[in-house]
Amino acid sequence: MDYRKVNEWITEMATLCKPDRIHFCDGSKEEYIKLLEQQVSENKAIKLNESKRPCSYAFFSDPSDVARVEDRTFISSVLKEDAGPTNNWIDPKILKPKMTELFDGSMKGRTMFVIPFVMGPVGALISQYGIQLTDSPYVVCNMRVMTRMGEHIMDIIESGKDFVPCLHSVGYPLAHNQKDLPWPSAPIDQKYIAHFPEERLIWSYGSGYGGNALLGKKCLALRIASKIGKEEGFMAEHMLILKLTNPKGIVKYILGAFPSACGKTNLAMLIPTIPGWKVETVGDDIAWIFKKDDGKLYAINPEKGFFGVAKGTSYQTNYNAMKSIEKNTIFTNVAITKDNDVYWEGMEEAPDELLSWKKQLWHRGDKEPAAHPNSRFTVPIEQAPNLAKEYDDKEGVLISAILVGGRRATTIPLVTEAYSFNHGVFMGSMMGSEITAAAISNNIGKVRRDPFAMLPFIGYHIKDYFTHWFDMKKGTKESDLPKIYYVNWFRKNDKGDFVWPGFGDNSRVLKWIFERQEGTANGIETPLGIMPDKDSFDLDGLNLEQNVLDELFSVDKEAWLSEVEDLRAYYETLGGVPKELYDELEALKDRLMKA
Ligand code: O2Y
Ligand code: MN
Image (cartoon, rainbow, N blue to C red; front, side, top):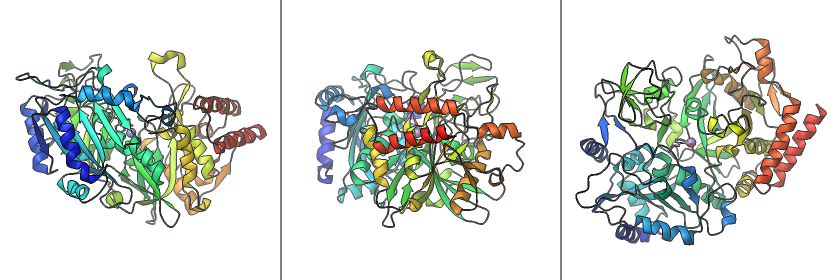
């Protein structure tokens, strides 16, 4: 939208939503603390123990508003065909009037906050500016942590930058003297997380939670940015960015695409078990990939904070995350200890008694978890002890390698290097995890495909998304492109136990990948791709039996031939995919048949 229209748009939206007052956010710490304290005084948050967890607060959502709602998320392109078969679509001619009706008066009794923000470092070529209007002070505080926001961004927008207008309401207007709820929201069938890609516009109604409400994150930095990237030649990807330094001080940057709940934040913050190696974090969730004049691919992290899953995070599983959240943190849906600190399952042994995320008394041994499984911490990226200095570099970092992977108990080896960029894109297209949820028991063990972990986040037709990957390599020598690796930390043995220790030991895989780029590690050609030569894979200090190692790198020909057919069938559900992917599918089948 044209910057000259800023005030016009704000006035128009305020006239529609009818807030009692409008607050232009300056982005200062004073404003942030004031809003948090105000919510404490209104019984919407609690302040945590200042001596244990300074300047930290806990919020508890309504039990009906605890996660992203994919069924209520829409790509409202003008043509259904442009949203493709993997997105929910409603004709904007229907959705706009429907949502206009919902927004009409939705902010009565509330303040409308105006949040100017930018995704990406100020001044970076592909950074995207936005203004979010919201009636949720919780959202304002989280946006301040997760994005670069404040008056200085409004100045930039007013000096002529285009911006993405983002309208958000929790959908719970207050009548005169009506008491507010601790976590106002709308019923599920009234929630709409809507994207209008042609207009580069986001409207979100009815939820105050995470990805539904912090519109800079999944809505702008992935769905809308993926469409902008398709038009302007960059890619908005669901990837972590890590900086890997070897004992000689040589640095490489590695990206990783993994679906939610596969340990992206843990990998981005990993502490290597191999001596002399160092991992630093550039980003833990989103990477924007762009090409420079040298023809090579670079990445920036558009975010400025972590919105990490609390459950399972401990000083053992993710020391750096635990250090990051020792202060200045917003917690959502965690449990509270007697001394007013936080607790979640997997953090440490549970105390006898807690206040659960539902604000009910909880006792050790109770059936229900004390913290919600999707409980979260929101924390500034600067608090990560292993933060890479490049996190704010508008030039981005040169990408050496891209990891793709999911949660697969069988079939997929620990690590496989793609033979070419096309083969790597093919690997990304076949990503997926085995279905484990009892609720869909008919499908247990089947693979739910999630290409590049982008299934819920591609803002246009998935077929065009694959084409865009192949477009990215045009004009660049194969040797200048990042190498792509399929990794799987989750292989299990016959007894159902994980065979690879994971966590810090994943650095052994990173080391092999690093040394492949340096040309100092050997690999073995297999039908699937290149796997580590035993002498080049550092297992020092790891007591892995030979049979375990064989299992980690085994290729089950029958299972793979069936995977090929499963994937072919998946491609058909997408209405077909680019020829390059079918060529790779046939090439894989040929290699398997010859093995
Ligand atoms: O449930 C939510 O709203 C959060 S989802 C989320 C948050 C941080 C990083 N990634 C994700 C995701 O779903 O991929
Ligand atoms: Mn994510």
